[in-house]
Amino acid sequence: MIEYSVIVEKNNYAQLCVCHQKALKPENPPKKLQFRLPMEKLCWGCHLKTPHLNALTHSQQVSDEIYETIKASEQKYQIILPLDQQKRIMCVTCHTAHEQ
Image (cartoon, rainbow, N blue to C red):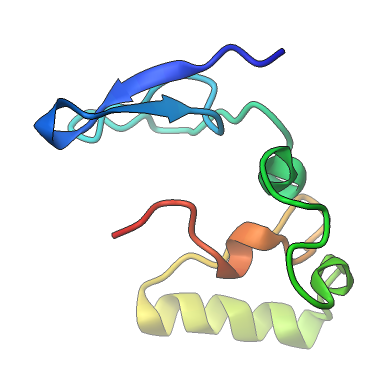
């Protein structure tokens, strides 16, 4: 069973922290994030293994050409498109867990 950390957000609403190893404080972010599961499997803790059509086929290593396109897009648009250790697309490459 996972132990949940609690992070207090604005208006004192408590939110369970099920992804990160420790509750994060927005005013003092850590230099390196630690997660409870490997990044490529993190979303499957709460969501189905195939949350949308072809989701599993996304989890493949990208070609060198696509990798360079991703890196160029990160620079151009000042965004982060994370890949896993094997340069595979994962849920958080396109989907954010944090609402803005």
